[in-house]
Amino acid sequence: MRFIPIFCILSLTIQCATYWKNRRNDLKDIVTVGAETPMYGAAIKIGPLPIGFLFQGGESEMGKKDLGRGVGIRGGEVGGYHSQQLVFAFLGGESFHSGNPVLDAKGNWLVDKKGIPLTEDERANVKSYKMRYYSYFNDPVKERKKRKKLHFQRELTKDLVRLTGQKEFLVYLPEEDKKPFGYPPGFLWNLEIAGGIYGGFRFGINFGEVLDLLVGFTTLDMFDDDVEGKEKPVFPGFPFAVPDSLEEAEEN
Image 1 (spheres, rainbow, N blue to C red):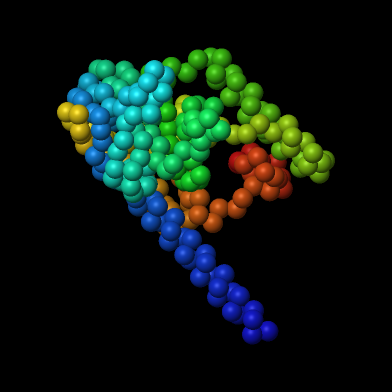
Image 2: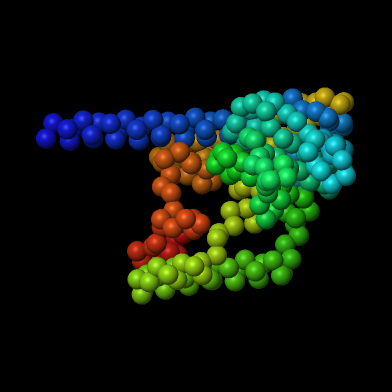
């Protein structure tokens, strides 16, 4: 029987370590401080809305957007990262990812449906993004209808599994798109400035991540980025466990 208290102590120790690791990650999400190259011009960005004239990144050959390097703290990671940004008045776009991208047999980056490189670091994948600024205002009817259709299909599939107990219905479950516009939710809360001549700097504060850190002490996860200790999906390829009730499915 003496092994039971020891097991409980070990379990609590692991949970506590995971909890504080997630809080440290939340803390690192708040600030962006980086040195980047190549960079020309200057811009300020409030949420997804920029203003200025800035070029950062580039291509080593036509169609290969592989230039644009930075080092510092960005996206909750400390070290090197890949960054590209174009600001022309209030138009343009940007992309970012940290970690080493997974390569295919030809040595090219593996990307998701949004063209965002995939890495072996789960949290780096959560924080990476690729977007055009006008997409914040432009949401075509066709895309909205597609999202509603997929949402209905997900909820119907969950309900069928709950009512029938037939988990085979999960093959019809579409995967939830965590970045419908190419960026994670925390992207909208960022205040950032960047500028330089060839070499440049980037500094930013994310006020949403401040709030995420504060509520994180209660174990709530605003931006769904607490990957440490998160339970893996019951069914590989599907981002949720089978719901026990319709109410639970609706909450998800």
